[in-house]
Each structure stands twice: as structure tokens, then as C-alpha cells.
Length: 146
Image (cartoon, rainbow, N blue to C red; front, top):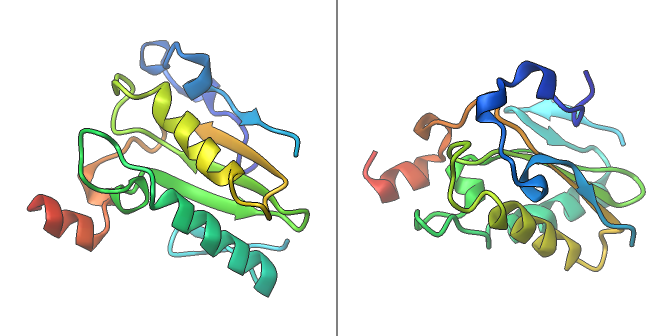
């Protein structure tokens, strides 16, 4: 199964979000990789620099119910930038019934598209593995008192 291949066949129907914007891969027309600490990283310096810019953009997106950005919350499972400067984001939400299921993925995609260097963006919302507080960064855990 590829990095961004849908896992819908493994997800029970009752955990799928009905909102098409949050449940599908979306893209806008406009590498090498290895895995380290559970995240996709790149050997190419320019690609790594662009990935850092994408991560910084993700750090400006907040779940409105929690005062921590989605990256520190552990909602972002993967960031991949290919050699053509296309961004692929794999993320989840705190739960399938998240009240911002329609808005949060759209905001993520918008923030990434605002980066001039990015040619296109594909976003996939996944439910496996399910999010849990153990996925938060140490800083996020301290802020929230975990």
C-alpha cells in the first residue's frame, strides 16, 4: 500500500466522516525519501528546506477546541514533498466526530497552497492509527498538563 493510498476498506463505516472535504484526497493544480522517527524526511537539501516551510505552515493551524497547533498535537502523520514540489499531507483528527472535520483539513490545505514554492497539495485524512494524547509532542503535553 502506498503512503497515500486510501485505507477506506480497513475503516468501519461508522467511523467515516460524511463530509467529502474531510474524507477524501483533494488536490489543486498550480525524491527520494526515508523514514526517521515515524516521519518522512528527504535527502535533497532544497526539498528538505521546502518540507520545513510546510511544517512551519502547519504549525499555524489550530484545533479551535485545543490551544495547541495540529503539528504539536500529533495530528499530522506525514509530510512529503516530491521533486516536482508537490506536497502530500497525511493527517487525522482527534476523533471521527470532530466538530471541525470539514474546516480543519480545508484550512491545512489552504495554508500549504499559500506557499509560493508548492505546485500542488494533496491531503488525506486517515483514521488508522487513531489519534491519542500519546501522539502529542512533549511541549504539547506539558501545556495541557499531561
